[in-house]
Image (tube, rainbow, N blue to C red; front, side):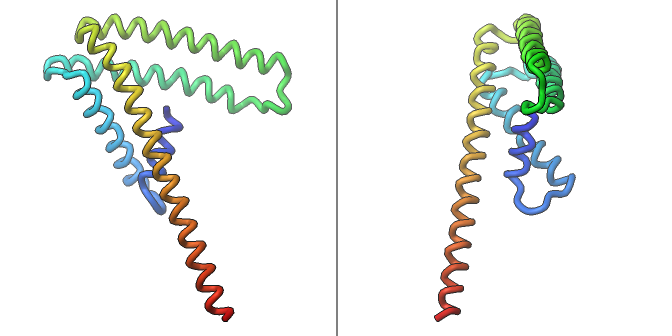
Length: 165
């Protein structure tokens, strides 16, 4: 998800980004996620007060597991790695998935003390929908940027042809 966030932030802001602009885009995305989840779950203010710290803790731990795997994966050169190194990475991936599943069970149990089972189920759907929404926006922006590049190329070609005539 971290890679997706970086891509989203990059695509949301055109041109050269300053640190402040980067942070502002990240905050906008986070605010959109909070708004979508809060709305989809129908959280009361009392539930939200207890839910969000728990959810944020869960999200950070889940992110940490993904980062751990990605760190190890980035160290591995698939072309030169031995079979044992590749197997070790696969084993790490399985181990981290198991940890992630256990962590999800633990946090679901903790969340059930704050929100209903229906709301926990809605949370999964809201997270999935948010991811899809962000990916759709990325694809739309890529297509839009591609169209702009093509239009610029066509205009430049037209100008060049006019100069040559």
